[in-house]
Image (cartoon, one colour):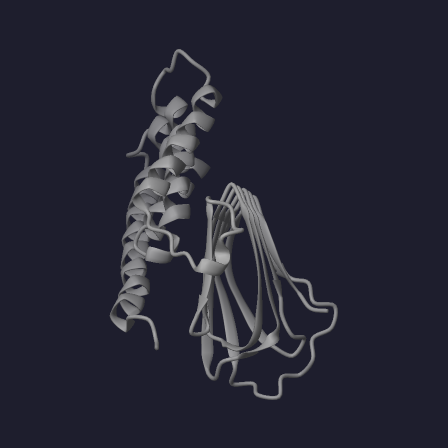
Length: 244
C-alpha cells in the first residue's frame, strides 16, 4: 500500500512556492540594501545566518516529515537573533538550552510517534518503523539502528535532533524508478550502508555540516533506472553513505 499521494505531492509543491516567495523577498531586500534604502542595522539583521536558519525552518514546516527539524531551526535562529534586535540584559546562551528543551518537549507532547511491538527496547525519545518499503524514523536526544532484510526499499524520512541513526540496506533491493529518502539532522548524524551498485543522487543543504558519499568502490548498477535521491538538510551535523 502506498502513502497518501495527495499529501506526498502537495508538500514539495508548497515548499517550492514558499521558497520562491522567500527568494523574491530576499531579492527585493537586497535591491533596497544595494540602493541605499535599507539602513545598515536592518541589513545586518535580515542578511544573517540566524535569518537563514529561520527561513529554512519556515520552508521545512510545509513538509510533515521535516516539521520537527524545521521547528528546531526556527527556535535556534530566533534565540540567536534576539541580541541583534533587542538590548538584552542577559547572555543569550543562558536561554538557548532551556529554549531548545522547551521546544523539544512541546514537540514530543504534540507529535504522535508511531511504534511497533518489537520496538520496546527503543528509547522513549526515538521512533522508527519500516512500512511497505518506507522507513520512518525520529530520533531526539537518542539514536536508532535498523537493518532492512529482503525487502524493496522505496525511501521515507529520517530526522535526527541531537541524535543519530544507522540504516543498513545492504540486504535490501532498490525499488524500480526513482525513490526519495529525506534526511534532516540538527546536531546529529546519519549513516547509510548501501550496496555498492546503488545509484544515489545527493540533494542536501548543509550549514556548518556535511553529507557525503564515502563508498570506497562504486560498482556499475545492473539497472540504471533505479535511483535513490537523498535530500534534506544537515545543520551542525552530518551524514555519510558507505558500503561493505
